Length: 239
Image 1: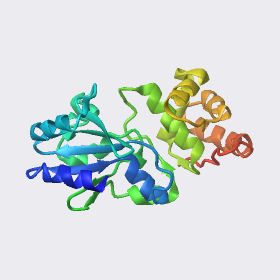
Image 2 (image 1 turned 180 degrees about the vertical axis):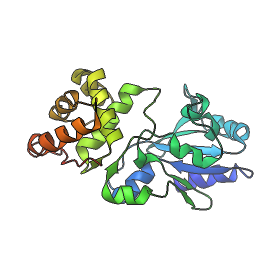
Image 3 (image 1 turned 90 degrees about the vertical axis):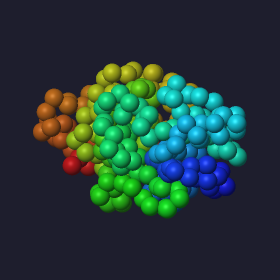
Image 4 (image 1 turned 120 degrees about the horizontal axis):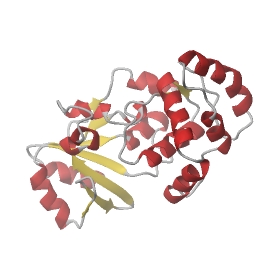
């Protein structure tokens, strides 16, 4: 993978290559142990020139205008920074590469690494949030809302996390919008193991998100009792 990333940088003499999101999140949280997801790469610069190189490697176009290929055993998604879905849809204005930190669904994914310079780009509170395992929703809009909700529930059920008000509301709304069967089916189609606890889905489906005070009280009252006995679930604090 290092050799491929170096080669892409060499193919971008007037641009930059960034690692984005998942791999950096997992390194920050656990040193990368157990990482088994895709590598997300973002290009700022001469994208047209790079597409010729990617096509020669046999990369296939995806529906968002980027490319997917496999490097060694890793699936890799690579796209132009300005073609990031939330930017292209006008949800987030593009000023510079840092704009991408406002396009992720979770704060944990709002991080980039310039592969050439090794400079990290993230919000000022990123590493303190990671240290506390504080989960927040940055941008709830997503081109695959069911898949996004499923991934947030997986994070919730596999990490000892704290939730912000925004994250709790997001999960409550998602649990009411999608049936447990739809969420479980999406998880089964995307991952070899099941992590999402049905008790978690039931709890958030019943969560009163109509007022912050009611939601806080419901979480304080119910979550320690409801979640302590569930394998891998969270004792969640609301901030």
